[in-house]
Amino acid sequence: MYTAQIKITLRKSILDPQGKTVEHSVQSLGYRNIKNTRIGKYVELEIDASSQEEANRITDEICRKLLANPVMEDYTFQITEQSEAEVEQS
Image 1: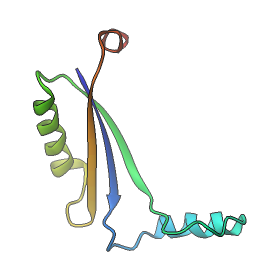
Image 2: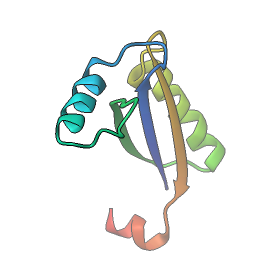
Image 3: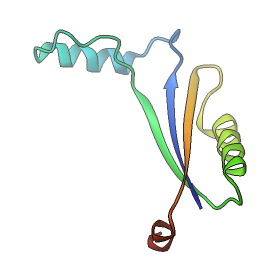
């Protein structure tokens, strides 16, 4: 069993109005040294796969086909293998 931790963000060339709103709000609290705030999505999946390579392939396909808009968003992910204790708790 593997865990995929996925981060999805708007491409750097795309204006992020939500990030700008948060940045202005944080600056209005007195934190003037905050710059280039971006807001994204975080998704975590448990994948029952026979290998890390298979978990990578499945995660990449899910990101491309469903989770990320390839025109506007970029994604990165990390795959970690769960220990036996973690699998039993699931």
